[in-house]
Image (tube, rainbow, N blue to C red; front, side):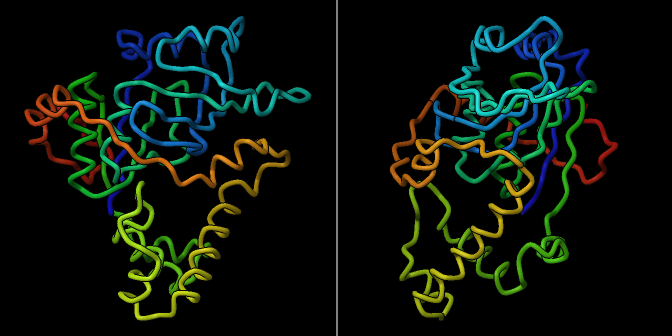
Length: 262
């Protein structure tokens, strides 16, 4: 498992299709997914608009649609929590791999876009290759994600990390799932009921870590129901994208965060 951060300077972004996003938003941060499949990526976004801009301007961006205002600015704050649908080419490519995920905290700020994703090395090369083809980043940096770092965070116990990693590697969290609970329990040599309990506690711990800092609920009943749906099958294919990406996958990720990709 590795983590890659792609960075584009804000001054360069004005020359891309993200330039209008920079005009509308002073700050935008990815909080988490609501739904994730090709051509239908719905996320929670924390936004600070530039003066004179608002929701209507955001909706005028071709690849963004605000579906719901989840939290309006309160007091002297000017932050919005929004449920938005994204259809940008890079967003769809990330969803298409099925094995890469945008990391919460990825953001557009005054420096530029910090786009962090995690996944297998091969899948990350797919996304980075596509990004270079669409609009070459100013910098691409990579680092490994070890179980030791996760364990030191205190969120999960060593046993929970072992089970979560095994479940992830065997496709339990893929859409659709690639392994049943029974088969996963057999591979891990534990009872099915025990595995179910462990996975439930793992998911609860991670959700508390992600959303526990919010003082106000930002999910409606409909959105909570959507999170429980399992019918996310049916990935679409695009021969055109595949042919183009086949030409750009000969890239090397770097471990030095100060290294610039030529």
